[in-house]
Image (cartoon, rainbow, N blue to C red; front, side, top):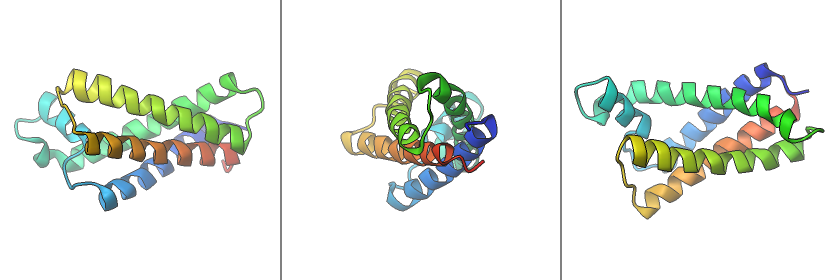
Length: 140
């Protein structure tokens, strides 16, 4: 059974796993959430707001997990591990497009190069699959 708690927990776990991938495979640049913090709250560059950016990213990930848990039973009538993984994959694509087009380009005015965009997509794919796995497994 899918619950809001499983979505929150899945979002937390998926964001932690995604963050590990970002730290291991990323280019050590601040995440877009640090740029968001710098643009709207801070008075320095994004590099100065890494902790705030990571906290904001964690909160986004947890919230996105809750949204996933609420939407999943509306999309598939019988939630299984396989269906949750499939919807998690699609959700990752949606999050990537929204993150890249709306947040990075639209709000922050960023224009990432191809390699950065590919990493961004890969990290969100990790998030979506882990989220789908946790929620679909019915652990909580």
